[in-house]
Amino acid sequence: MYRKYYNVSLTGNVQDIGFRKFIENTANSYHVTGYVFNDQNGSVKMLCAGQVELLNTFFDAVQTRPPQGIRIEKFIKTEIPIPKDFDLNVPNKFLKLATDELADIGRKLDTGVELLKTLPQIEESVGRLPEIKTGINTLNLNFEDFRTDQREHNKRMEEQNKQLTQILQKLAEK
Image 1 (cartoon, rainbow, N blue to C red):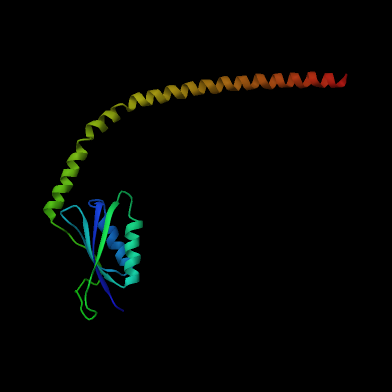
Image 2: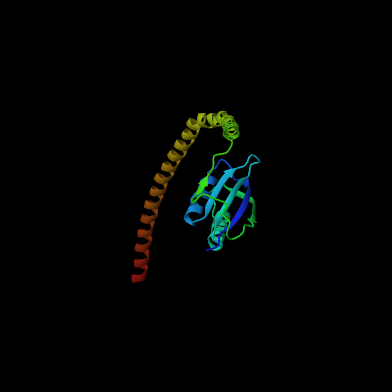
């Protein structure tokens, strides 16, 4: 069967969150071949090859069922016009390519530094846990007092209901 080739570019929140692995697994499950990589401009790029129906199903899956946290702003696919008897020597399996290691590592380190900046806020929140626990314990004690009062009230109401029933029975007998 005739294979088609596409260049695909995806922009949005698409790097450093496992999107390439999702694309690799999804492509292989649809028998789409090619490769995916992170571009330095923040996009994810693919070269895809396969039967048209399988490619369209794969493209739909990537756009409509990405993992949580991934936000695709643009999905641009461009068909590469190749004569039927020509092969681009695309790998037999869809692969996730390693990109510029230094750029990827630098970007990931920058993200880590930003996350580390939130530690004082987390530490402050954790430091307040004893206060929160004290508040919850106080609420629990108040609730127990309320339950005890409510049980006593319910017993009194039962006694009054019995008395009213007896009065109504005596009135009915007359």
